[in-house]
Length: 147
Image 1 (tube, rainbow, N blue to C red):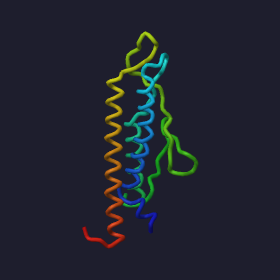
Image 2: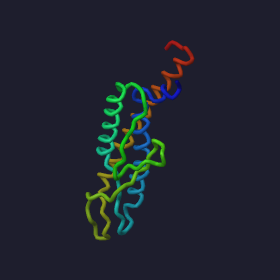
Image 3: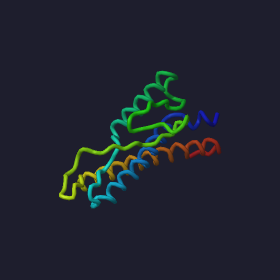
Image 4: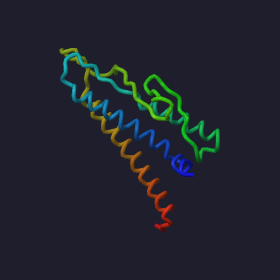
């Protein structure tokens, strides 16, 4: 029963988004920290590819059982790799093509990096708020509190 509660509704998708945004934030911060390093090539993962993969997993769950309960069975991509047999994953960033090639052969665009970081932080915050709300509702229901 507890497993059904933790895999119901939007919780699995919000957890995946939280993990994705947290891991991507490390990649983006690493890029910004090395912006002045000669020959540094920034890396990133495509958030749109992640959204597409997550959308397919949600649609697959809907097809299996109506979409209300169950784990999300997602497929690996070149940038998102499964860790062991679990539903956990690790990001595999690739070198980005954008940016301006400077005299030190560093391909960088600080404004774009900062925009990516803000968008990613917003996605993280939305997922965290959604998970917090869902868990608070579950705790209130278990404790039989009326809110």
